[in-house]
Length: 484
Image (cartoon, rainbow, N blue to C red):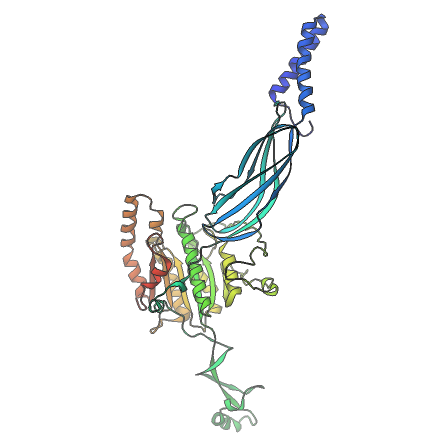
């Protein structure tokens, strides 16, 4: 009976037995003594029978990577020893998982012999994130209820990585429509192939080709600095650059805990990331908060779980990442409070952005769009990138968007030939609407936002309105025309 407590009924039975025995021996009454012995025999039998013990739990399912709304199968084997009694076992699932088949709860009666029971289920993963399925809870009950129920947990670890549902723009069959999707202008870097665009005249250094020497300028300099040569330097062409900014302000929570504006915005970020990385662009990513400039108080970030890197190895389209690249120092800047991944190319960058999106939540950053752009200015100045701002345009938030767009114009100017800024507006009103009346109200709210869309277009932005309920991500991009 160690580590177990007697129930209130059992304690009352013990007191009753002692009372009858004492009175029986004091009065010499065999009937009272017999009544006192009956509870003692009952309790002795209960102690000898014992109580069930859950000794081990084994999980058949292994670590897995799935997309949002995909299904995960699992099966558990539970070993029970000890005495007879009622046993219940439950595999604790995250709140965003819901059962599709089977059950994650098992109730059974254990006899005198040891028993092994199996049960399984299929669950739908409704929200992206990193989930560590670890605890299996159980409860055992004594057959004679002479002791309290024993509650406990056993570890049977399994990691489930739920990726944001990818939105592949490359599946569009109409190639003329694809050409409407803006591409970044040519970016210039200190490396790459030299172009015909003149940059400056500088002193000759070891390694410069003799054909680059500017003989006329060098001849004029000979009288002042004999033996010194000047060379022409031209701009070098690098990879085109794209910056994606994701809004994580409180208004992005419009909808349910599982199906809300932020979840669709994250899927849109994945779509843009896949599209531009597949086209050999350097993609940077930043999370900001529109309400940060209004927010007073201390920023408290949710503690993010440690991700087992071996689980992330096989994420879709991100395989074949070397161990050296995976263990490389992360590019998330720690000096600022914004969440920034600096521009990079290929599967490594796709892997980093996917991993970052697993943890994005409401108010994931503490910098406004203007402040986030300022934090990234070192990697923006001197390039001509395309900026994609994924947000929800509302009258209360329009000032933050306009301030951010003006900050972008400070570093890149207003391009007249190609648009440089895309405002990708996720219309959350339709996501939150449930009844027909609410859908009509969502339509009116969207209509009243039209002047704000026109104001942003007047600043040289492309405004893409996406209703996730009524159209696909690809169709929202198809119907946009460059210059709108």
